[in-house]
View 1 (tube, rainbow, N blue to C red):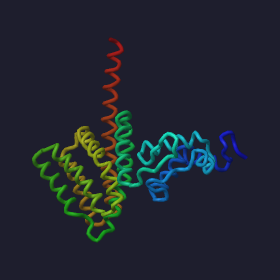
View 2 (view 1 turned 180 degrees about the horizontal axis):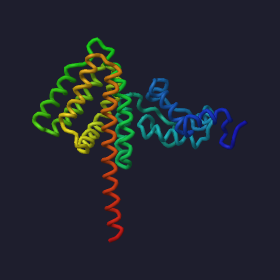
View 3 (view 1 turned 120 degrees about the vertical axis):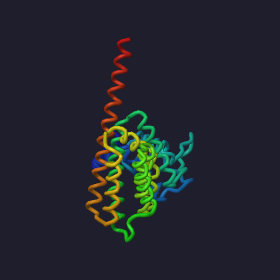
View 4 (view 1 turned 180 degrees about the vertical axis):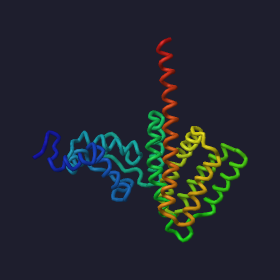
Amino acid sequence: MANEDGMTEGTEFSLRRRGRLHSAVSSILESRILNGELKVGDRLGSESAIAKEFGVSTRAVREAVQELEVKGLVQRRHGERTEVVRDDVDGYLDTLAVTVQQRLSTDPDYLLQLMVVRRMLETEVVELLTEREVPLTEDVKAALEAMRVARDEEDFAGFVDADARFHLALVHATGNQMLMLIYDNLAGLINNVIHITSRVPTKSLQDAYQEHADIYDLIMRRDKDGSKLRLRAQIDNSADYLRQAIEKSNQKKAKKEDKNDRL
């Protein structure tokens, strides 16, 4: 039996389990574009045809197509059916990075979600590395050495930059092109997080260096569990520092707004 939006009960329940209706439709169409089923220059079906296929309202289809347009995957023209304008994953991830940046500008707590994504990616990276015959590259070693030099010279800014290069080099050491592509698009954000979190704790550069040296040694020994635990702990600590930084920033904003309200 169809409901007032024209959906069958089974279809509606299935899509609702995946989230809001238009997001579910958008996700499926996006997948068809990225896997090549829908190619650049192809036209999507009419709103009514797509609505019938998925068992949703035309309003849900309109919102789904709008999501795809924001991501730069399709283009709508008045009086014409929507056209696929991009199918390259690289360009799509560029758009994703911009979207994340825009979200961060209005919602600082989004950084904490970025840390969850970072932990998921990097712990999987460590697992891949410990399964390799030669776990690490010279770039990882060079970044760790740069951290040591910055520690000895008490060069805080240089240490933070080397810290970011160390984590980026770990990802590139896997040789996994998709992981590298995703991480590279988020690298600027992660670098910013490292700069923020490094200024919150009282942890010495020596302690920070030793954390990374331990991770390096554990990976070189192919200690999968040990290296994953050490890396996860390091990122979790950074997330705690980030939370402190956000709380301090929010407190300052609240005090400033309170002061302005009293003027």
